[in-house]
Length: 386
Length: 136
Image (cartoon, rainbow over all chains, first blue to last red; front, top):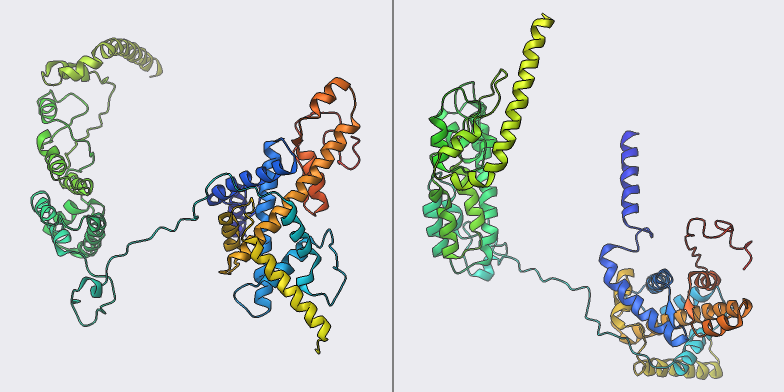
């Protein structure tokens, strides 16, 4: 019963989202409705109206669209009833008569009437004769536009031989082995990857798909490797796995390894400076052995070579070169007031400090004062509690 | 199923009249564009490569809209003639014919389409009352 309730809720939401009408009006229909509004407005103008209310125009155009839709549906139904796929002029006339039967037309009560003599057709003939020829205001392009999807060529089309007898030639061909062979080895990503990319300059379109394929392949491979390591693999394997895909790595024991967490690349000087601080400080950012230039080297290379898939390559690079972040959560009431000290002493970071200096100093002074007050209050309270 | 010679001639005449009419449709360009009609017919499952049928549907739709609009126009004119408060105002307003929801809902009601316009909150003392019982 609970599931049924949930389903009903979702349906309600969906029907609410498809505002007003149940399934007829959808987001993709906006263009057609807009054109219908213009057409209806032109017809009304020819009848004699000079201006419209927005809501009235919308309603009438919606009704018009439904009219066409219903007419098409009825016509199709009549054609199918007669055992045909394609509709006939008589199907259309029958459908029109059905729609107009509410008001009635000449000859409606006649059972043996001929459709061609239908009163409705006569009405239309009169209408065409009387009405002025008012063309639609805009040039309407063909819609909806069908996007032609360029699929990957089959073995036959590419003229390649499938690798084995079990692979039929009409299947899409395998991608170039250059692109996906480079990503499998850890640590060699940057150099060999860039070479492979440069040699494969010809087929640019597929390169966009290949990195995704590489990712999937890599994950699949690592998934398999990860499973085996969970069962009881070597520590070396586990290390390799953890380097390539941290999510599939074997769980670590306490103190075995430091955790790579932050993808933020900090400048080395900052990290070195922090490492030399007194051990009393609460937070430490240590171990960033990658200089700024190194991290941005692939970016510079990518810009030079002008490849569009550089972003995915860089993701791989970042994967392998994550800085290690050490967190030490301290116990005690010592306040965090080390930040401004080492920033101001470091030359390279003085520019950044300059931006935050004025604000920081005042805020920190206030904060320090407040914290001292708090601590003193707590200290004074404690003996009272005891 | 033995057609009389007269009726068969009549049928031929009708058929020829119909085919002539369909041919004449190609000269007349309906206000509703073909692409729009094609889109909605395709949505409904209508399959026909013949352009004349699409024109027929477009013309029929245009006729429908024109009828609804003319009914609404008559309602509007009737309302303007009925309410005669200030002679000066009416003479000025007579020139402005606006398609209003009220007139549209009345004319569509005859075609079987029930449209009700949402009332503004407390627009008038008769807000929310069934329109049939309302006086206008």
